[in-house]
Length: 386
Image (tube, rainbow, N blue to C red; front, top):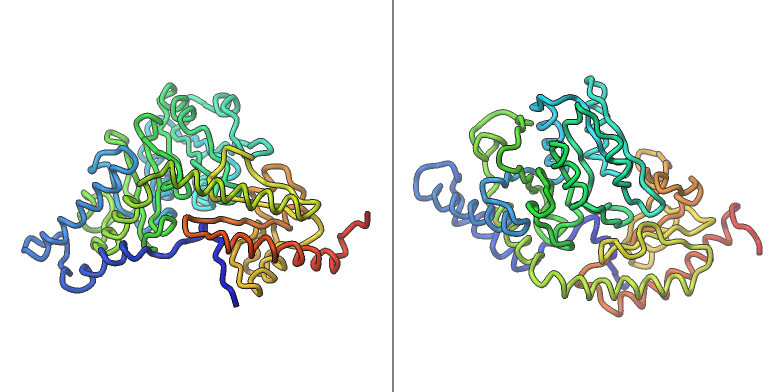
């Protein structure tokens, strides 16, 4: 059976050149980076090269990069760390379409006495700058708006948000897990104070990410223990993963414009193919201002989980807008936030492609999808006859 991977937003494979750089640190170079002997110094040197590679990718200083276990920890640390250290107040501004690592952290903070404003978005998933300005209060300590949405791919006006935050002396955090390696990022030009990224979205290893913290930003620790990461994030340095992260981000940010153009061409080919072959379908997210490899469709009269299973039987891996976990059939909070009715949000499909997506894979997907939709609609009690 043919196998086609179209779920790059969920995770990616580790590139051979990334793995090649990591392997020595599982064997011959195994020292603890905080040991003073030669074994430790060799590991420490590798850690600092990795830190420099991450910093260079976003225009930061090496000492502003702190390694974490991934995007979720980085988001939690950024939000909790800043608001607990803030002397300005206990008010947070975020959006309704954030990743759950942000939303659930904010919800927990509300239980602890903090106040949170969840900004609505328009039909394309874009935050209103006017609404953001109106939500700012004297006690607003943090603005946290994601760079690009993980489900619908919409890219937010991050530079404008950063400017507003700076003008109002508010710390600005952005979750850039989906954007890194796809969008050019300069934390200084964009006035970003904290930024979360993860390795496994860009052909790096799972289990490592980073939090950029602008020099001078007050942030409390999320965890306590040793003196690693300059005393801000304890735990033995994971040298192999850091090395892989550094190599992966360096590769991901090379020839970015050319790679984005190629991905965008593939995206439009899939979009045009789906729209021309299938009726009662809508594209979710901004039609242009979106991640180059992201497509999110809603197909009327079907259920997303059945669609995913049917595609999987054909060897096609994608994801759905339905959070079908633990018996829950609640539709995506992102799709509801952009105004989709429950029944339409349930019939959603996220297709995310990468540099390795081939023409043959695109042709196969476009050939197999229409009959699957037709079969599921024929079985559905929701289908309306023309």
